[in-house]
Image: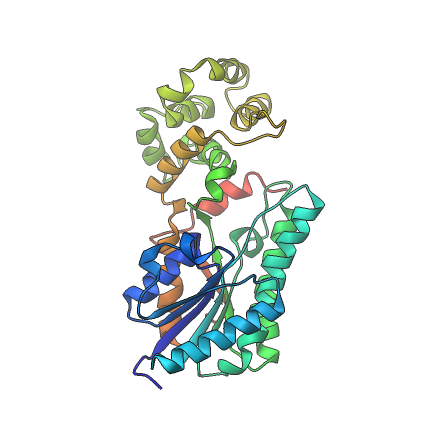
Length: 345
């Protein structure tokens, strides 16, 4: 056995929270084994070091997780990297809606992948020798979900159950991490940030008694409390609201300044225009602006923040008391729940 106290095994390690966790663990001096479906040549070179192992593998396939396990144990032993405590994180996950085939794929990865990696490594992380972690989500932890994401919510609730109850039955101590709104390549292609910005205008900006009102108004360039419609336009900025595409939205805002119904519907349609393929896609420029503002408000955080919070917990050697670690903000506050609750299905 090597001289390492902690080591990390993680799925979905090529991008998003997984890649950030690999990078953070390596920076802490941990040996790391990670897998993903991407070929090795597409992996960030900074993740491939003398203390890391990459295996191309699909978490939905039990035999490939068994192979990932055998490669990890053998490689660590051959390079004298075997840690005292082996922490295993089921980080691979996707969000899908609508298409039954894609929804099933989401279940296979979010639920099946958590189950498969747990069973592959269960004998290597008995109680006191490491922790198992499943990736849940704020929508499951807080019992909220944007309409249409109920199946995603269910997969994340199941991931938590596997990481705690299923792990316990195998003699493994585990917990789930619930990230909030995370800025990743996946979320940059979704409308959630735009909806959260709408929530900020309605919940924070137009309520002068709210402790975040002044902060939101400053970001919107507004001195005094105004209607939600005015606040949202200010948060978006003139480069977006001055375009031809936004004119019809402005007209709806004039009729519905409180964004009670028609203004919201028109904004949602603007946020998700139909593409040449006939499908609706979030406007990247609006999502980028929303992410910028929401990051300043500590509503949206980067994957490196989740990685830090998770690794800090792993270093304690114990799971949180209730089996759930919330990673909603950089400063420990929970500003995002109010905004997501505004659009709960």
